Length: 114
Image 1 (cartoon, rainbow, N blue to C red):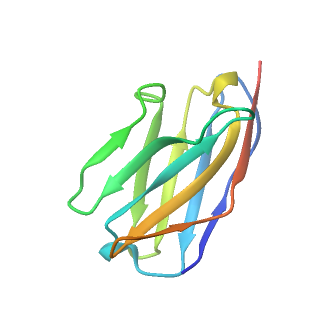
Image 2: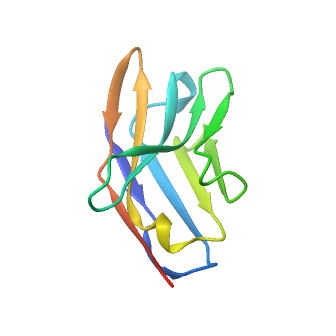
Image 3: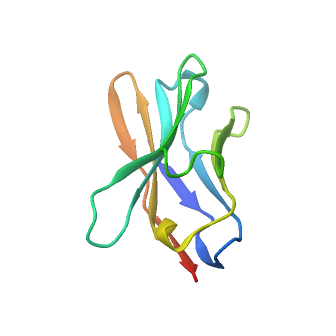
């Protein structure tokens, strides 16, 4: 199973980016799919996730600014990030769990300048 993340880049504070995570396996059967991020010198943290039966969770720091969604037909998970802040700067990783096995994509770097 491969997860290919893309969409990172450099953006000014207040701007927007959309991350994409393309899966080589059907995401309609996924237990959970989501995004983590890791800033320099910090632990990896969960940003947003979608669960099997439709539940969605967000980190408190991104609620109201980020939206996770998925396109089951294309096997892509998106993370729309609006009103970006310098503290959102991090490497963003997509992850998915199928049948209790976790898979990770490579990180995509998001840099928000002040």
